[in-house]
Amino acid sequence: MSVTPGLTGGEVFLNPAARTAAAMAAPPRAPLGLHRRLPGYAVTPLADAPALARANGVGRVWVKDESARLGLPAFKLLGASWAAYRALAARLGRDPEPWVSLDELRQTLAPLRPLTLAAATDGNHGRAVARIAALLDLDADVYVPKGTAAARIAAIEREGARVTVVDGDYDRAVASAAATAGDRCLAIQDVGWPGYEQVPAWVVEGYGTIFWEVDDQLAARGEEAPDVVVIPVGVGGLAAAAVRHWRRRELRRPARLLGVEPLAAACVLRSLQVGRIVTVPGPHDSIMAGLNCGTPSVVAWPLLQSGLDAVVAVADERARQAMRDLAAAGIVAGETGAASLAGLAEATGGRAASRLRDALGLGAGTRVLLVCTEGATDPEAYHRIVGGT
Image (tube, rainbow, N blue to C red; front, side):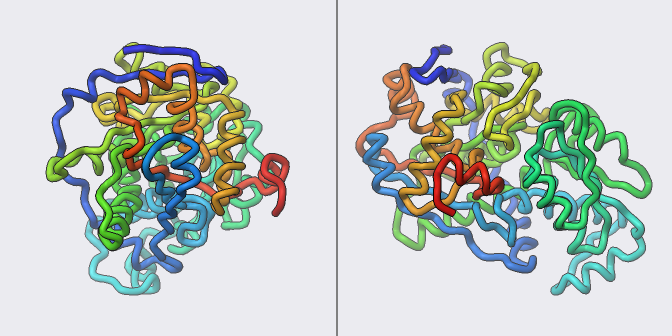
């Protein structure tokens, strides 16, 4: 176990618990079946990035590019759609299957209306909940923390949602959204707390589509699975999905997992340090807005604690440089979307690089998967950092 400042102010935690954790059952593929029936579904690209591999001293770098997923510039609709679908089925009291078209599904859900889906967000999750609500002829209320970029608020409103700016941080927005739940309102939240665990567990399942697609894409190319997967960590839902997928017991060789957080909101790193969930006080003001979370999800936490081999907390400048490097590789990534590459750069070029290389097995033959979780969700900020359009 260790924590070391990096050259750019980054920090590192090496997690000894991951070395002895047992393999787990495979996550379900059922969410993929739902996603394939949503309008605009397509497998997102898995880009080979040899320049990034050379720059970081590894054998291969693949970038799973989630900058255009189901018509939105981020991956979040995968979790929001599956969680909303399962929550609506539970409210309906039966499985809506079989259905082929959204018209059929909307008709089946008609007895539930009027009904509102509520969520807290730093941007992408709330927009995804608003989109699935619109697709199913439901209302949406979205709560955002003070300081959320105007472009992100406007994007949520364009989905037809009512947006409330909360005078506080992300955790305060979560509390506001949770307080609205009732007979005519379902909270579809990607963070869990005691007593609210099933919906965020469904969100984690929904994110699994990303990794099932990666499996199929690599198999189609005759490639082996990655040795290292680098994953952004906010409240932990996507990272938990990565743990479930890459540590499933049928894998001959599980991947090693590196989580990435902003220095301003390193709640998982701090929690791993002390062995329990802790809250990192604000302000959570990183440019990696989707990762500005002060408390890990109670649903994700057990998987993060046993499954992440290491966590790096990176400075904003790492994310800016990662955005520029991804742009040079032909990939448009927003600040949060670039976090995986920022984490890899910290692991291979920060002050703790030698120990991280040893812990993760990073070397000239290592195959690394990066998940780019969003595109340019704030176009003005993207232009300032990267240039161009």
